[in-house]
Length: 188
Image 1 (cartoon, rainbow, N blue to C red):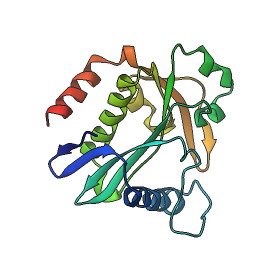
Image 2: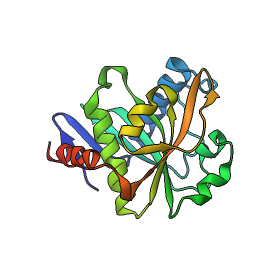
Image 3: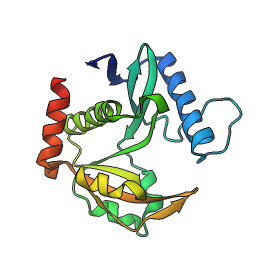
């Protein structure tokens, strides 16, 4: 298991029950209280519906999980619900990795946490020979995702109170600037 430290942050794959409990509490605070997307399960904790197949990457600051993102390789993808034609996924060549349910504590919402988690996902995707990364991104952030190399697979759809766009990134066509940013982040 590789740990990546950046200043006081550690970016790694989740590997303990205590970390999982912290992730579930972060998901609750983010997606039940702050940006209500899920019903309150009444336990101050939220378990993702893909939990059994997820791989979690986390950002740890002073021994506390302060950010996370989950990925999985299917076969069922949540992005399919955002597509007008779910068969568009079968048109993508090679295996896909879905990156979903991204959350960061408000006091840590700046570039280093996002960059560290994105790097972990990208490295995992390339090391495990995935051809595409799938996301359902906020429509208000679509231009940012496009600069990262994602392209829309369909129209935005309303989920809760926000519009989301189904998107994919062909890993072999990742923009040079993004690859340079990942390399620069690795050196930090």
